[in-house]
Amino acid sequence: MEAGGVGVGLALQTRAAGFGTGRRRGGLQSPIGSLRVAEPAGAAVAVRARGSKPVAPLRAKKSSGGHENLHNSVDEALLLKRKSEEVLFYLNGRCIYLVGMMGSGKSTVGKIMSEVLGYSFFDSDKLVEQAVGMPSVAQIFKVHSEAFFRDNESSVLRDLSSMRRLVVATGGGAVIRPVNWKYMKKGLSVWLDVPLDALARRIAKVGTASRPLLDQPSGDPYTMAFSKLSMLAEQRGDAYANADVRVSLEEIASKQGHDDVSKLTPTDIAIESLHKIESFVIEHAADNVVGDSQSESQVRRIQTL
Ligand SMILES: Nc1ncnc2c1ncn2[C@@H]1O[C@H](COP(=O)(O)OP(=O)(O)O)[C@@H](O)[C@H]1O
Ligand SMILES: O=C(O)C1=C[C@@H](OP(=O)(O)O)[C@@H](O)[C@H](O)C1
Ligand SMILES: [Mg+2]
Image (cartoon, helix red, strand yellow):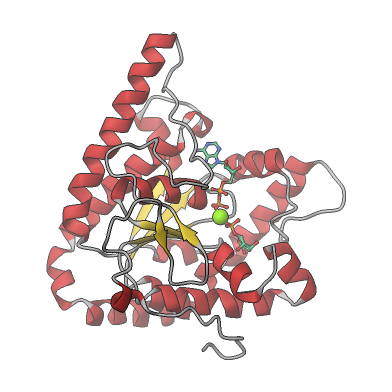
């Protein structure tokens, strides 16, 4: 347990239960209480677990007509599927951790990646809520404190770090504790790097009620979100850059000829993430042989930053 943590108590029956290795219909039963995890979709991107929320729909790049949109969506789905098959080979069961600022799309993109890879999906915020027995992160901050939330977040990440074949959407602040990197370095970490103005637009659209660090009683939602996010980004400095892979939405947009990252779909971002993961794993293939000692040396490097 982390110092001051309450002990999340995720039952680590993973290996004994064969968790994360089988493909049962109707979704895998998580070892964590009654949490249902997304069913691996295998061939179809649009397929989703029973009872789960749909992932963001596949949208066409440049909408010009019904048939073209459909073709673009199919192309995107096929590209995503093909890329995921290639990446699976190299991943060899390693987990993927998505990091990034609030609103960067970790939960949205993470679900798509997990479905197409046939991995299970976990959102660390949801696991903390479940462990603490409260319905929202906002309430945990209010009734307890941010420190209490952070202790539980670390406990959740520690427990997940012994599992395989997971995509984990972390909370935006998980990167600030070096110990969390020790856990995340057991798998591959992906930083979704999204410009602050795009983050603020997304947050202003959905509201700040679920994100206590951005919640403001008054003021223009976009301006307030932008100013808070800028402050947090400054405080967090280079913490996100510890990730193995950086997925820059500005770079994807520029490659696709868009002048604005808001044109990028979650699927575009999932495809680019898989592409970057593949390049990283191929480039570090020799390191993987050393496995844990490699992770430890990376963590030591982070701790000395
Ligand atoms: N590529 C995207 N384009 C537009 N909106 C997006 C995109 N990705 C995510 N969103 C929206 O932004 C909001 C934040 O996304 P979410 O996945 O919850 O981010 P995070 O988990 O990083 O905080 C959600 O309302 C989501 O629907
Ligand atoms: O950046 C942060 O410190 C936080 C991000 C949130 O998760 P998302 O990044 O999924 O919004 C959640 O963990 C909490 O509100 C704190
Ligand atoms: Mg999230």
